[in-house]
Length: 179
Image 1 (cartoon, one colour):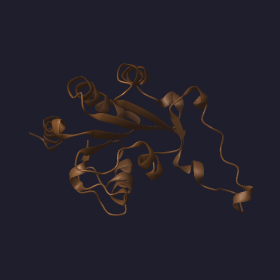
Image 2 (tube, rainbow, N blue to C red):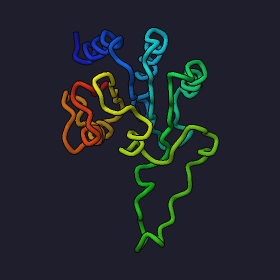
Image 3 (cartoon, helix red, strand yellow):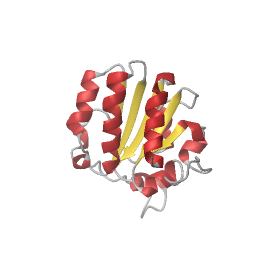
């Protein structure tokens, strides 16, 4: 059995012990999350789930109808935040001081989303919308290599690396699953 298969199997076997899951995904990383969501929402009635899904543009949201369906079907158990925009949204380029800074306009059609925040998945969004570290919670991460590097460390490394967002928040190796 491959390492990734063991991780998924271990997660599904340990679900009954969990109270909460925070799912962090970017771009096409949402697909494996939806697969897990289908199983967890239908079989594990006691688990609360919060998903932060990062995309650059509203039009980049994949499988939106499926995610919105989960919100409608499981309003007391599933929360979703679309993180839309660029990590550069808060960088003060071409401004000599904060008073001169003009933020970029919101992405096209951003106003059509009721559950969205501007910018990338970051520490403040995880703290506000995710579940805090504890033995009965897990964080699942899925995205491009840079996403892993920033949030928890390389995908092929089982550790939550120092100087990453999840490490700074207080998540341990046992609490973080890298898909």
